[in-house]
Image: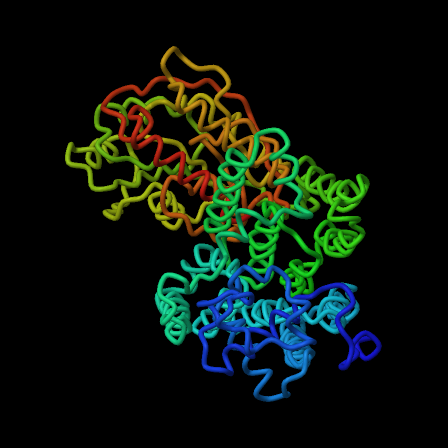
Amino acid sequence: MRAAAFEPGATPPLSTDLHRYAWDARVQASGINPYRYAPDDARLARLRDDVVWPEINLKSWRTVYPPGAEASFLSARVVFGHGLRVTTWLFLLAEAAAAGLLLLVLARLGAPLERIAVLAWHPLAVSEIAANGHVDALALLAGAGLLASWQARRFAFTGVAVAFGALVKLGPVLLLPALVRRGGRRFVGVVLTLVALAYVPYLGAGGLVVGSIADYVDRQRFGGSLYWVTGRALGDASTAFVLAAILLVIVLFVALREHDAVEQVARSCLLVVGGLLLVAGYVQPWHALALLPFLVVVPARGWLWLTGTLPLLYLFDDGALPSWVRPAVYGPFAAWIAWRLLTPRRPPLVALEPLPARPGVAAVIPALDEVDALPALLQELPDGVVNEIVVVDGGSRDGTPDAARAQGARVVVEPRRGYGRACATGAAATDADVIIFFDGDGSDDPAALPMVLEPVLAGRAAISLGSRVVGEAGAQLPHQRLGNALVTLLLRLVYGLRVHDVPPMRAVRRDALAGLALRELTYGWPTEMLVKAARTGLPVEEVGIPWRVRRGGHSKISGRLGPSARAGATMLRVVARYS
């Protein structure tokens, strides 16, 4: 296919970008900084010819290509000669290298190697690399290198890949926030160092070193989706602000996600690079080449549709698209996005192993300075419901440990702060088959313990939630209700888990808890439990219980707006992390 599409002596059929590549290479070979002058500048008149010069687009604009792209144009001229199509040879080699790296990624995953056809047989790859010779082939190679190096945990090389991508098309720099937490300081250092070094040879142009990129962003309008829709309603100025905000939200959301597995990285890259494509005011089919390596690893149907139909943008007439093109390209993609949001996928529920005939039940109660509430709470525990009471003390100074021991509880001291850490420490201190967690401030009614335990003890659920449906006046403040509603809404939308509360009282099987491998040590621990339960197919049930105001002492979190906001943000972060 590529041999048929690539004619070394012919002009590209659908684009004149190669003429700009050849011109920029000629300018550099003459010892002139390509960012200093536009092609129609009289000082470059001696470089004009009858093949390259007449077909250069936007002759009054200085180059918009970053230093990595400029270096590739010059390198192709040095290695392959002075012809118009010499860069295409380089880009075909880059595509072949990308295919090799992606085959390595697939082999390491144990995934079908046939998935490489997403790249090898994709119409965009044939048309926009072999036929039209676009520099975006180097962005494709950068994406493949990113995935291969991340999978191998060679994060410095991932930095090389991200820097290379950003030096070719700028957009990949938006991946930095997503990868920085896992990639670490070396990753960031490599990216920043390579980008800075690449600009050094061109700094003689001073402030002109960015070329005409500002004109490109402000004035080029074609083929966009969200920009086209929003611009018709709001105008250009407001549209730019709104779409920049949308892109920022995407980048921040992706930055919160977990990126251990290469599939997770591929999904995040699709969101960021694809999101940039969707908010852009100027879109051409070849801009989607950068998505292909990620689609080889995660062949998402909606993105496959979008990349496969973008060539319809070539059907413009006198600069305008037929009215049906945008709906044909973007309509099914938008429907797919809506379907994914409204019908989140949950794995089939797993079958639970039977519990012992007489399962052991332990109550785990995190507490910090709860001497005014905890003794009465322990006295209210119904007889015969739990076999063991474990109070996890976080370093109380008011006598809470002694008060707990006086009521028959076993006290485990965990001086390191963190609600999740306290719960995990308490769970590790008992070998009970079922553990029920609740707070030590008396806001949980111990009379509800049998109701919350029943779905787990009956074998219907791995986790049972004591959802707060009826509360005393002041038991839950407005900001708590709002945050809880937002978290549970996201749990339904993202994970398909239909719960109405993320409550402190919850019962869980020990084997299920161990299998979840919870890592969140803060107030995100209960949310992480639900998120991972939804992802692994563990059955979760809700039981409505009464909710009370705390029975004494002072609230450390829920009664104060600042700590509550931080706890809520942590819960939202956990929802995003595993999405």
